[in-house]
Length: 362
Image (cartoon, rainbow, N blue to C red; front, side):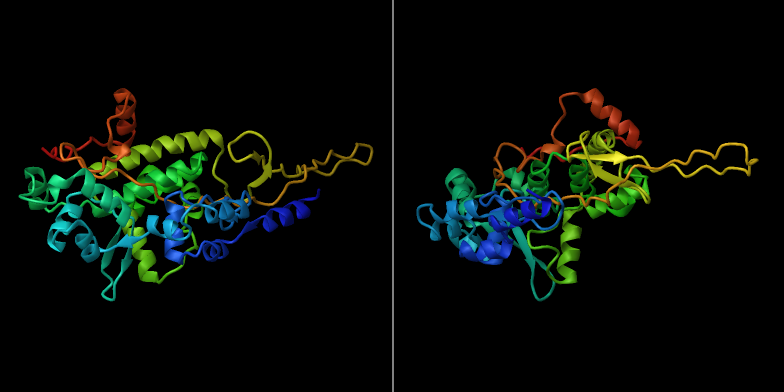
């Protein structure tokens, strides 16, 4: 089978994201959430481009009991007013629970005033009400009041942690994993960690995009980029530490492409790509007498064109809401490491000291 026939066969057995959404009777936003939650498995194309969905995956979901209502129920989202009504509390108390970190948003949109409006999974709110009913009535615990008095707002932090955790779980390619963490730092901090401009350009090129591509208004894309960046000193520090770790792994696997570099398929890294050395230029030969043999000319091996990096489909996974006796929605990137000496070594490379953590919730 030729390459063209293989591509045609794979295209015939898969469908575009928009077509899959229509087949599953989901709106674009609902379908994006289904992909984010891992309810719909997507196929990442090795040659780059938008992910696609196998027809077998669509058939599997259509044959499930209660389709399509059951699938729609799992991706149904609510705002503050509807969420408060679902939990049978006031909108003000709902906002306080969300700001203190008890509720994790699944997505957001911008209203007419370009303000961020957070949306929550209705199914997660119902599970939270059954698990933490003591937080829905009576006086709020002291740790909630303390957080709110300090001006805490964990909505963006929890949404960001959920998104990063899911994106990191979708790929084993170290450069793609580093690109996810690079998106959490502002340009100044990123330049401090990644001083090579070619590596920064490569990380920006393979940064994952939403399911349906970079759609939406410029203000929405700007808001997405702003919310993806860590906004708290402790989180910033550990995102930098995580990026350093992924960069070390990525550089061992393969270097970032540079102008003039060529890539060809082959063993040697996770993506099946192997860097090919730049062909040596022909040597400059001084004129020789006719009796001397002609100099040997170097013929570089034929090379293939640059291979675009594949982009993983960004998805989310449900994150357990807060526990009243612990910090809400703990971020794995902020948890203590098993090897503190290794973490200290990374901090030393940053030239920074870890600042005091947030006060415990109790």
